[in-house]
Image 1: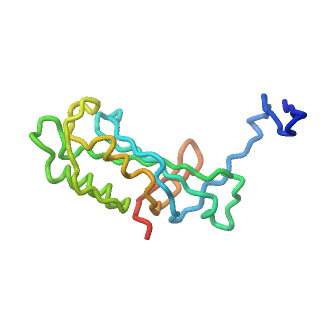
Image 2: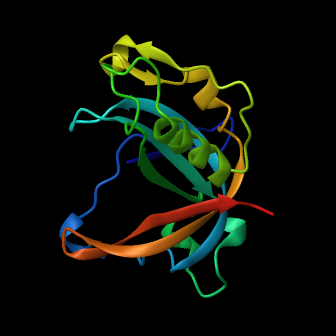
Length: 169
């Protein structure tokens, strides 16, 4: 149902009915590298019990390839990526190992960010694994990167996924 308000002429959609069986799958974002911006970066404990950083990257319609129908995602594309950071940061260790520290450094390097005073602490929300604070992880939000988009099968169709992040030059 659509109602047009007389005073503004703007439509107010209160209901939209469609036969979903007739809706085709949109084409996935083509395989290539895209400039993107980190929308969110959040550390959490994965289902497997490992500290993981979940990233959301936004790709603007301005960088879609000319052959890609922007109507597939007219507001841009948000893709997610997960990075495990548990190695060398187990709770039984007296401090994060060099491997653990290097895991975090690689995450920051891939985003073109530097964290000169990384402060690791055991975190209750991460079952006492050594980790950086949310504030330190959030320093990655807003960074501009290049994401390598690939296609991977999911539920019978190709879906865009991120296979690598590098700093935007």
